[in-house]
Image 1 (cartoon, rainbow, N blue to C red):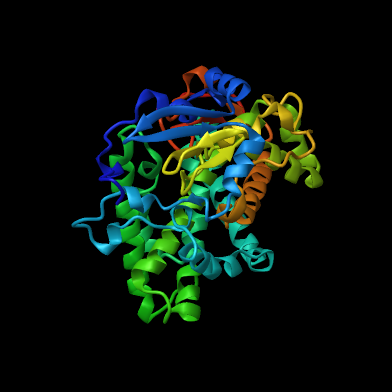
Image 2 (image 1 turned 90 degrees about the horizontal axis):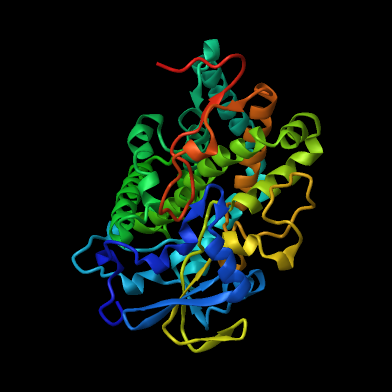
Length: 415
């Protein structure tokens, strides 16, 4: 740990740090976009004697995200005390490690996420979505409203990720409770790191249970192919990274994406009647919503210029993916959700060597779930105005706590 810095002890985030993780409904705060227009590389504050910077411009974001490992570090563990903590509680994962460890870990995962291997998941995803749509229809019988977050948006990716990892059905109820707190920054680093330890511990135990009798999911496959090279903690950390990247993010995209589709008639029509346009709708949703608000922090290993601004050795840099995706230099009217727009090369999955390894799985899941939802419930409407929705106040992954919808017919308030 460098210079006695311990992010675990940070109980709240200073106000200046919260700019990129606050929103006005689905949109970035005007102050964030003003910062982009005036200072796409902006110093937010000094902390622990180091500068903390925010990058909001698209080319500047690409420059940092694709930066050389000799210049930038993702190793958050160097700023978190590991003293007195078990192996299960150590900080790690693809997004917070540097080469050569990052290269080694990604090499294990990449073959599992090729298009050929992902294709085998399509029937299972469709079956999961169908099951959840049936449950929604039953819950919405008689015109009662349904909470789409609970019944669909969280349920679908949770079942997909559990199937992907190969977690036994009987273990899933406890696992379900561990997800959302991972991204809640309202208590600074303390709450998020504590929640992370619980999910890592759960998955490390799942690896231990499968080592003798591997399951038919990702954990079992990696045990059979690389079991001699991977100890329980390392493989549990890999599984945790898959969970981290594929659960909460997809859940938020499904919920907020449904809101936009239900309030943008053209998007629903395209999903139902034009299969070739599904990809375009999903790419625009990914760009516009960008639920992963901030990329993993980068730390400068030497003095470096970004967009003509000098970042000093040891400074921390956050990249606002949301702001970068709406940079006017990318195109016109990017503040508007337009499902007919030609796809924009967005940064919602990151960029460079830390780009989300599960990006194609996420796309497959979103295309399947949103298309089937639009086909099954063409008259789905919101049962609440956007001003009445409870959005997450301080979360690295933006989302909504509940999304009441009316599936068909006259609305009857649920008891």
